[in-house]
Length: 552
Image (cartoon, rainbow, N blue to C red):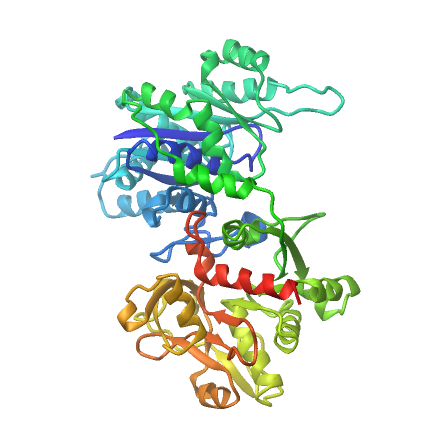
C-alpha cells in the first residue's frame, strides 16, 4: 500500500480536497486503484449537526454518513462511492480510544495521546486503504494547529515505519499583493517550517495562486525548503476545478509522485476528462437562468455558497453537458417573505426554480411563495427534500383548499399536518440525538410507469432495476408526507409518482405535463449522486426544461 498525505498551510479553504482529488484522477488514469480518507479536526462525530454556513454543505454518502463536503469532491472526481471509512474526525478517534481503555484493550497501560491516538489514525487509514493501491489522506485545517497534530504524528510514524511507501504533499498559498505585483513565497517557507517542526519534510509543495508559480519563486522555495525545483507544482486559479487534473498532468505531477513511491508511471488515459473540460471551456450560444431559493448564505458581512456545494456542482454538471451558460441567482427566502423588490424581480426573471434542503421555520413561507409562483406561472420547478415537503404544503393550501396546511416541524398544532414526523422505528430511521431520528443514506423507490419522472429515469437508463421501476437515491431528512392526505391531494391533481417499495413513504411527486411543463420534486437528494462525466438525469431534464422556458 502507498500513502499520499495532503496537508495545507497558510490559510484554510485553499483547495486541498480538489488538489488531492485531481492528483487522484491522474493516478487512476494510469490504471491504479485509488481511494481517499478525509481527516477532520472537530470533535463532532460527523458533520450532520454542524450549521452549513459554519462548515459548508454536508456531503451525504450512500451508507448514510454525513461527511465533510470534500468527500463529495472525491466521489465526483474519482467516480467511486465513499462511505464512513473514508471520513474520520478527532471526535471519532478519541471516542474509539476511550472506549478501548474502558474495554481493557490496553491491558492496564497508561494510555497517553501519543502514541495511541496516532496509532488509531493509522488503523483507520489502513482500513480505508484495503483493496486499493494508493490512498490519498487529506489532513483538515492547516499545519501548526493544535487540533490536528495527531494526524501529523500519524504521518511521521507511518513514514518511520514504511519510508518507501509514504509521500507528503503540502498545499500552500502564494499571495500576489496589488501594491507589489509579484507572487510572494515567504508564507510557503514559513508553512514548511511548521511541518519541519513536526519532523515532516514535504516531498512536494503545491502552490495555490492566482497565476502559475514562476521559476524564480520555485527556485526560492526549493532552496529554503530543501526541495527539488521540479517538485514545486503550480495550482493556479482556473475557470473550472475540473481543469486541475489536466494542469497537473502537464507538469507530470502524477508521474513524479509515482516515481517517489517506487511505482511505474504507466500510460495515462484522460481522454474522457479532456473531452469534458473542452466542453466546459467552449463558447456557448445559450444561457439559462436558474434561481435557488436559499436561506443558508450569510456569514458575518459575507455571503458564502459552500452551504449548497453539491447542488451547485449538480447544476453545473447538467449545464456543462448541455453546453449552456449558467446565470445562477441566489434568492433569499426571507426576502421573498418581506416582498423585497429585488428578490421578486429575480424570481420573475429566472427560467427555472429550485427549492433545496432546509430545516425549520425561518424562510419557509418565502420558499412556499416561490413554489406557488413556479406552479401558477408554469416555471420549471425542482424541489429537493424540504423542497418536496413545501411543494406538498403549497398544493394543499392553494389547490386542495386546506388553507392552514403545514408541516409539524413548523407548526406542531397545525389543523392539516400534510407533512409530519413519524414514530421512531429503527427499521426505517436512525437515531440522531435525544428524541430525534432521521432517514439517512440510500433508499429505494418504485416509480409509476406512466409518470413523467419514470420517463426521465428510463431515458437515462438510471434504474436500479428497470423491470420493477426501481431507483435508489440518498436521503437526509426527518419529516415525511402524511399518508392520510394522499388520496385527497391525488384527487386534486397531485401525482405521487414515486413511493417506497412498501408504499409507506412518499418519495417523488409531480404535476401532469398537461398542467405544468416541469413540476417535479423528490424527498431524496439527487445532487449527491451527480458527477461531471454523468450528470444526474433529474438535473439534466430540469435544465432542458428551463432552457425552453427562456425562449417563451
